[in-house]
Length: 328
Image (cartoon, rainbow, N blue to C red):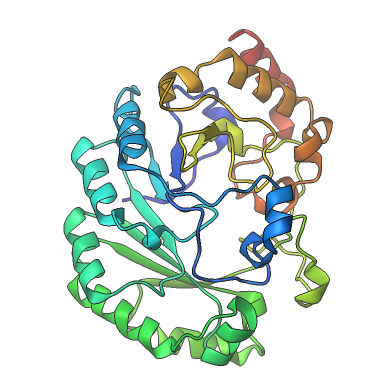
């Protein structure tokens, strides 16, 4: 299993998406103060955010569609605007995708609070390749402050230690938000706490991802991107290599909380048709002319904070416009 990124521009256009993100739940058991789930219901309604969960019919149709691509995905990722482990069929979802052999890596992004020993056994048996756990602190008090929940941090540690003791090939990646730590010593404490509960531990930097959240109430943000550096791009690269499937089957170009465009639904079109559609190609050409030209994208933090090394397309703009213009 590899998580190494390639230089994206030299691979475009792609016949097969590098990744598909499945959003199985638009519910969460946390209300983290930097996340949309901290917002009141009336604000979520204004954002057209509807709490929903994915049916197995929608999910299986999406996975079956992935099998139609010429190559395997690099990654199938369960994540989204909610907690994937809230879905009662999450282990069955992983198992189905593994059986269909649609991706080199199947990954879950979770807050880890619902990871029981029983669920760990099911996910391991299903063949999960990577478990990515986002921590909100190293004390129960910090969890209460940030996520408005009563959590015993020791339970999370013990449950992850169990997972690590039973796993076969699953990589366990545990990250903590920089705003969850009160002093430089906290990172050393974090690494010590989780030394037997993960394969990799890291810090991620909080970014202003949700425009409707007042980040001034959270504390001073570092100004760094999630991976620790900042390099603003005029082009968002996400739509060029990924698709997102919402709980109702709607397919979107990225994981932003406000969408610049909605593609078709997997229940009416295949993912391969959507990937190769004139609609998607026209949107990519708009991106290449500058994210600032697209209403939603110009206010999105991803081009400034969310891109990883190798994903920047600015220097290849004219070359890529020529390539995608030929696909019309």
